[in-house]
Length: 106
Image 1: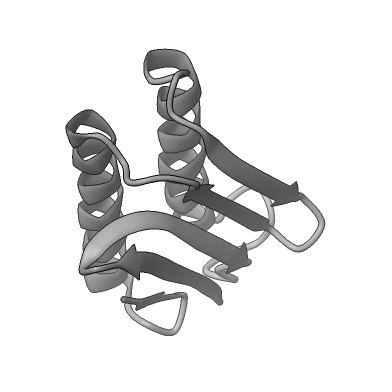
Image 2: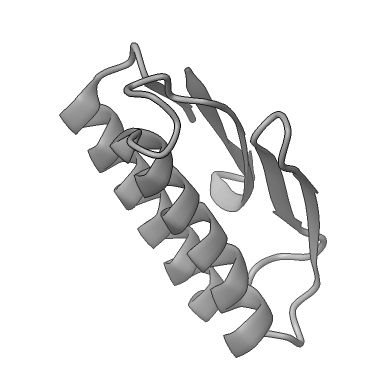
């Protein structure tokens, strides 16, 4: 199962931690894992590409499927929108495919 933990400070999202594997299907055919991976990596890439002035700490371990991305300061309005969009996407995947494959902790 993939676990996604939303990191909040003062009620606002400051980052996320995702780890694990969905086990929805075999490797290369797991659409839940692919969806979470694409959403997570795209969000991190968007921070780095469009908001390079905002400092994020990103840790990746491909073996365990762990990606942690946390803002060291209060995220800007643009960063907050990207974080809210990430949350919305992960929540939608969890609702579509169930908590047996993806567990969102907020």
